[in-house]
Image (cartoon, rainbow over all chains, first blue to last red; front, side, top):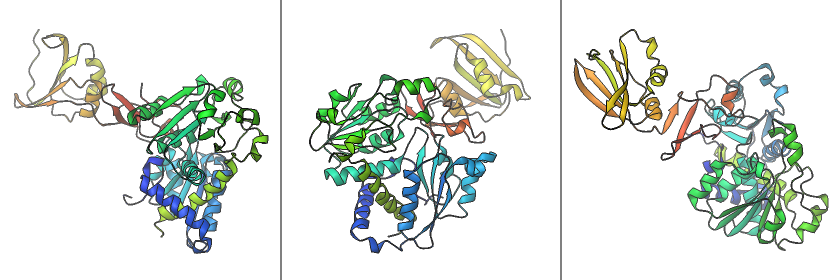
Amino acid sequence: MENVRNLINITDLTLDEIDHLIEVADDIVANPTDYQDICRHKKLATLFFEPSTRTRLSFEAAMLELGGSVLGFSEAKSSSAAKGESVSDTVRTVGCYADIIAMRHPKEGAPIVAAQKTVVPIINGGDGGHFHPTQTLTDLLTIKRRKGRLNNLVVGLCGDLQFGRTVHSLIEAMLRYENVEFVLISPNELRVPEYIKEKMNEVGVKWTETTSLEEALPKLDILYMTRVQRERFFNQEDYIRLKDSYILDLAKLKLAKEDLSIMHPLPRVNEISVEVDDDPRADYFFQALCGKHVRMALILFLLGIK
Amino acid sequence: MNVDGVKNGIVLDHIKAGESMNIYQLLQLDKLDCCVAIIQNVKSEKYGKKDIIKIDTELEVDLDALGYIDNHITVNVVENGELARKLHLELPETLTSVIQCKNPRCITSVEQEIVHKFKLVNKEKKTYRCVYCDAEYK
């Protein structure tokens, strides 16, 4: 199993490898016919123990556009997990059927367990509130395409920063680029976990915490909005109290730079008002498109094709 | 007070006073079929007071677990009544099956067969994080 590459955390990839994926993603857009049959006879299994629209469909669309096939399940109750089967056993079995596995699981660390049990590459499509590296690749590609760079940026992250796995992965990824400053905007109850702060301090990156979106907005190059996720709360009262903490609308956007890029991993509930969708700074649907391109590049990379 | 010496076995010295019973349980010394002596509150020049455990059998001690509990403990290996080796402990880089992750969101909370494993992330603060979910052990 030593030679198998997995993507569990974004830091499993070197900066050169991320650059390579971004290049391939751009080449896929420039030369689509070169890629349309490149994964013929290869199968991707999507094991989604937790519901998802974008991540699962973008993985499936990515594999189909590469000429491959897909199989899998989209919720735990339609798999043997409902009968009590372990992640280990499920993955060991599916590894006999597919060439590569993309999985999402509500429990943190599930893909690490999976990777220990199979010889096919595992892609973490989100494990609880922990990591979501392919969203991060999506985010990096979006930032690169919109800003032309991944360094010298002030990045604001807003909303649920405690359970928001996309936030944790994005911070870890951007820590490795020069002169990136983080502004962490959240209610006090949903601040970034300590281990992420420790990592930022280790690297010596500049970061600040605030509860005010309005205060943070004027200095940002990127505003990364997140949803307060109902499914991460054990206590529904806490969820109801915190869910409407930040709502971005056109009035607030007047405080922002002209070239701000507004990103969101989606799905949104109400944290970005629909009126913002037509603003040229709204990049969240473009981000979804980038997600497909970068997942195509990732599948090729992990399968060792081209 | 006299306690017989060990002929072939192990003497755990410099145990923090009051910790010997925890170590006795952790190393499951109650399951051994040999003489085990726990000596508490022994005078110590270094620490004021200390505990000592003498185990009168050759035993593979989990040095990682012991190092995690107290890396000041000295492990003396006795052979034929003589001190053969003296081992000084360090905080282990990884801990396997010694402590359990308490994060209810961790995969180890639902799949019982997974071995609990932690990595040392801060030596000074003695901070360990679960290799699966990154939760700090407290």
